[in-house]
Length: 453
Image 1 (cartoon, rainbow, N blue to C red):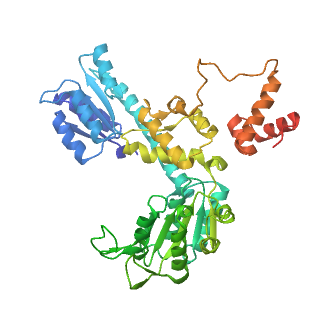
Image 2: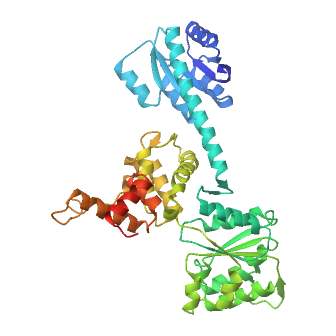
Image 3: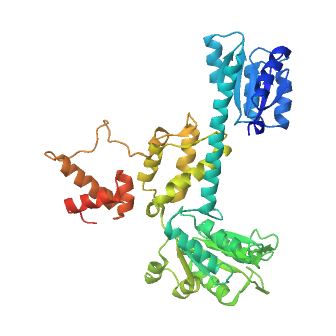
């Protein structure tokens, strides 16, 4: 229905204002009028208008350009059409540069106005439908603050639902930036402890003495600087969940202390004599291979088995490349309002560039890349040029990598396919996506060139 779209006509000439408003109302739109820029801003603060018709020359302190600038600050998604009787190339360029969507010259023709508004509303309808579809798609693949369509991640989400209300200790393993804390929060808030505290501690951030006090608290006078009693994180998490991030970095002494807490659910504050009992679920995380750390005698075997009751390994982003488009759009939707940018999405070329990248820093690196691209983007769509920093730099002198002489095109194709498969650890689906060909085509080439996987 057209009546759901609200339009504001801003002009100090009453005849022009009422004529334009009447034409638009005949087309079925809901139309209001304002006689000055200040009046328009007052209305914009109380109601959202899809389209503003703003006269370029108005008395009262605010001209059309200034009014448009303030309107766009209040309502970034609104379309502003500048109207004027003084048509020059310079004023048109100035209006468009400042953010006007269109520029109309008086006297306005009803048919011209109708076609212009219809075109803008058609685009807005498409944008609204796309936004709704994106939200539905995100909801379909969302699990708390995690977003994924990967079958491996779906298995993890199912496991989390099964164990969320149990008290069993969980060990989350995965590379840095894969979302281990987000998964720990999903476990906590999915279970019956969700209304109780979730307390996170980074075991890699503090020295042993400080970490002991962070875990268990301390009594007044327990050490220099302990001017008052302090409750530790285990005590603060009573009834809820404590998340021990980078558990593989704790010292041998603290490993022994943690083992006792896991076995008995009791501990002493540093310098204390009264034992404190807690009901707390422990979720630990690490980017290290703890089993290997145990074999190398760098991590206690008994603590490892206490922690590893339920094991969840989050795959790195390069092993779930199907998540990259979904994550990229999710990050654009979340970051663009924070950065004050109005973004419609991301181009296919930019997505291919994201899909080709290995992401050693995983989702955290992807987030940083999207934020950097949003800051420098000059349009409403992220392009491959905005993500050019992801491409490997050429050697000094601007020349490509040196190639052996005498290679045929088939030799080059074989070498490139082999290198791509090696880079992606033999993952044919990911390699096909990176090469821009079908998996069946890639299988044929692997067979033809006898490329080992």
